[in-house]
Image 1: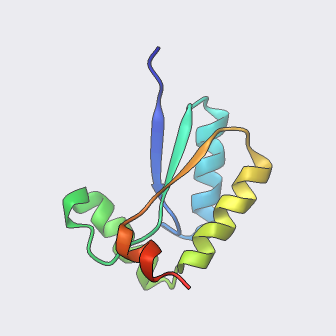
Image 2 (image 1 turned 45 degrees about the vertical axis):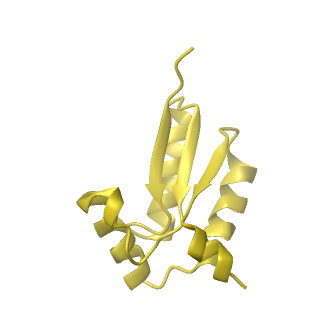
Length: 94
């Protein structure tokens, strides 16, 4: 069976809009939602995702904000949520 996973960058274009887009994805019937923790140099992700990461970071999004977004969404939707990140972010997280 084929499944559909969508992807958003936490905090892009802002946290409120990001949350509403994730809820819309869930309402639309996607099977999984991947939430990317913004990273300063996601070159391999391509220019669109790289730009979203840069804008999220420029607006001050921190790892703790991403966890808060995940917590809020998890209590409001039933669609499984996944984090996408880079090792160095998680390795240095305090």
